[in-house]
Image (tube, rainbow, N blue to C red; front, side, top):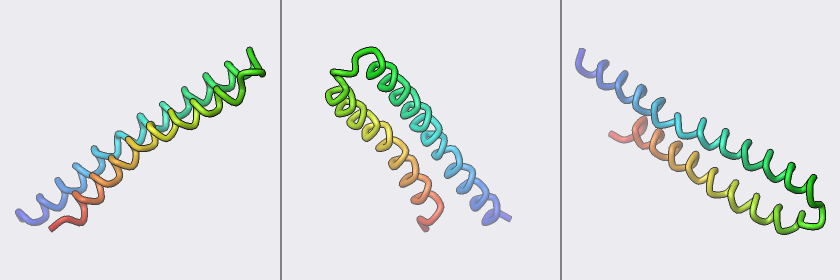
Length: 78
């Protein structure tokens, strides 16, 4: 009985850890939307805006990767 409860809690914790991926997805959407609007308002600044957008997306994606790593550790650690 205790083994099945621990297994269930392990998967519950992994699912909760993946909530960070939702935030990363929303953040990337907000960054992309802001960049498109900024480029639409000032097309001459597109290279600088695009560079900053890619950097911000990389930071947001790192949060999702950390959440995935945490979930995988919870599921597959002994």
